[in-house]
Image (cartoon, rainbow, N blue to C red):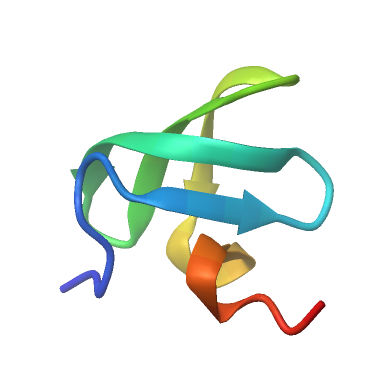
Length: 53
């Protein structure tokens, strides 16, 4: 079960900011602002509000 929700804004170390478009198990489909749509494992992204910098 993912702690993320569809539509949530997230941050990925390599791809930057994006919004979750779909969730499949522990994989998130994210539309990244600069990198386009990607599927990433949930543990590699953080909620945009959880970023310490």
